[in-house]
Length: 297
Image (cartoon, rainbow, N blue to C red; front, side, top):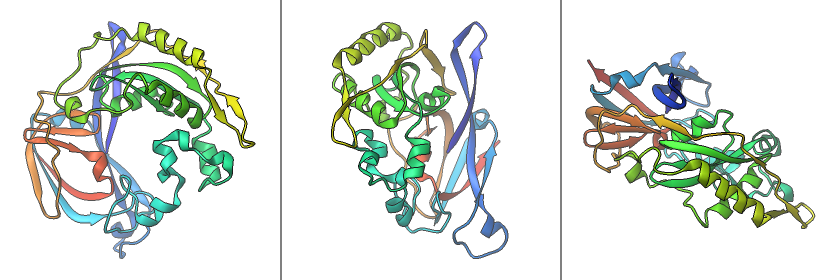
């Protein structure tokens, strides 16, 4: 997957430039000459893959897939990198992660209560972003910019914060009546929306008022309705994001097959997508897949 760093424009601190690193793992069992099984993942990275834009790259999938959670070999990947056992057992793979309003921790049926307490009951942000157009979203990222970059947003602003994922999900569900909560990836990877075409400060004020007036609630463990608690964001202006893109390609998702070599000129990187001359590859789709990467200078 793609790691990233960024720096602000010296003339405008709200305008950031992205540099990508290519993050991958090696497994301790294979490095020690042992038979692949459940194993420790050792994180590695190729620094500044952005500097390779304009170069010819080759990707070859070996056919081997390992679970990103336990490290064991799996014939099929579930939910972006899990083996079947981890898919059905881990709380991070439950439906409520994608649909926070379905959270059932308060009912005592969470798969991993301690994991939920550490991950779901912490500050979450509800934001407005311009990816393939205006959209609403939520994140627990401490640096909210990480989420915006992963989604390919060219501009974004935080609306409000809550103390839990479930509360954020209720607000997101309410706002999704007026805004989409998904990105049209085909549009996102083939064009950049115009920065400044949306008055984010004005739109934030409008949507924060709408949330406050809606007086949103959720059900407690005793079956009673309790009010959603939130705090308006202190962010004064939107953040504008520039991605390393030489040019765009067609809206074609390139699929990988065992022993197939995908090659082409790297035109750019946006979100988790590599933009090649013949289409795009969503690296997040292939978490846990073993690839050989060759970059020709």
